[in-house]
Amino acid sequence: MTNASRSTGVAIVGGGVIGLSCAFELARRGKSVTVIEREQTGFGASTVAAGMLTPSFEVEMTTPELVELQLDSLRRYPQFVADVESASGLSCGYRDEGTLWVSRHRDDELELDHLCQIQEDRGLPAKRLTGRETRGIEPYLSPRVIGGLLVETDHQVNSRLLSTALRAACLVVGVELVERAGVTAVDRSGGRIALSIESQGNRHTLHADQALLAAGVWLEDGLITPLPRIGMRPIKGQIVHLTGQPLINHVLRNSDVYIVPRAEGELLLGATEEEQGFNMEPTAGGTLDLLRYAFEILPGIYDLYVSEIDVGLRPAVSDHQPVIGPTDTEGIFIAGGHYRGGVLLAPSTAHWMADLMTTGNVPTPIEPFGIDRFSAEAQQEAAG
Ligand code: GLY
Image 1 (cartoon, rainbow, N blue to C red):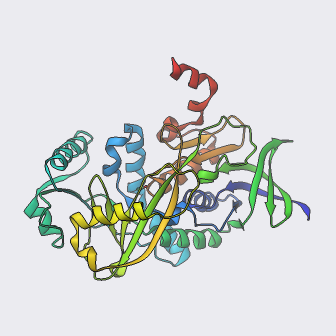
Image 2: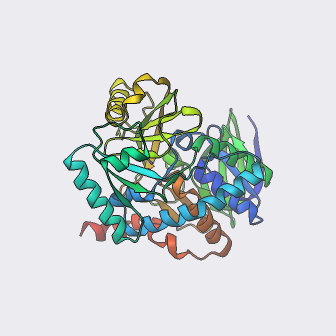
Image 3: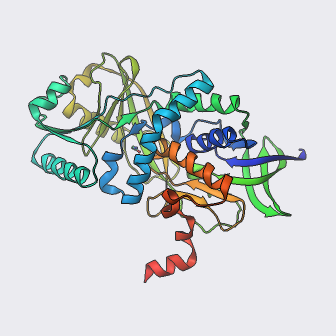
């Protein structure tokens, strides 16, 4: 067992899509950056995610401030992907065909009217369609589909390709990756941040000018740091992967399921939302639900092959909003709780976090997402 000591400019705890995006941006702005990841960087929830870049579809469950941040991130995506692809030489699998809601009965129709109205009220584009028009766009849809809502500005990225490309891009811009290493404490002492790191029986301290906590569902797990508790909890999501004849071009969605087309005929059916703690096992019930809901709108999946059943843990805090900003401890920052939107929010989180960490000022778009909402005073106020 060794007890060495090392040094960096910015230490990022967590090498998922948020940690790596922040690392890439900070390194490009001239910071020396080290990412510490408990498994392998670019894995975890980031690679399980379907990669839908669809703010319109979360619009009902989301505050206006978060919709603004999602739209900001969506606008940044083409440039973000271009930067990652040009640094890494690897594709991120970005696709911009748009997304199609489909309805099967009157309840769905009313929901689509409602969603369309929300979109219009927020100045977001949406095209309401008849059943015939909807099936004209995606001919393999079931004849039972009676209507649709097309959002041409909602796109998708292949989260696995993105994670691999981001990891490679980080290495190209000089980010140091410390993998299979757990961070047990982050503290400020003697004017610098000290991170206690354990890896395969070895312990060392990494000294940093700044630290960013971006460890997804593990953000609070065993981490000793002077933060208010943010109540991080995992929300399990199962996704079924199918392969075979290509059936659709657009991301399809209804209130029960989403179906995401990827290259070479792969389809992702997602996703369950389960409170199962850190359980990562796929279940018959979850798989059955996804297949049944998808079959209702796209019967052609019957002949496809099941290639994989994947499970991810979405990092959620009590109000289901992300936590992005400084902490009370000088030099320690947080980017977590992205829940259903980590892949979508990666470019804006990285951009605004890099602004914050280089200037010391909290940028307006991330002001609503500060950790101060979890302080004892804020919690007491909310309780009335
Ligand atoms: N972003 C979709 C999901 O988390 O299932």
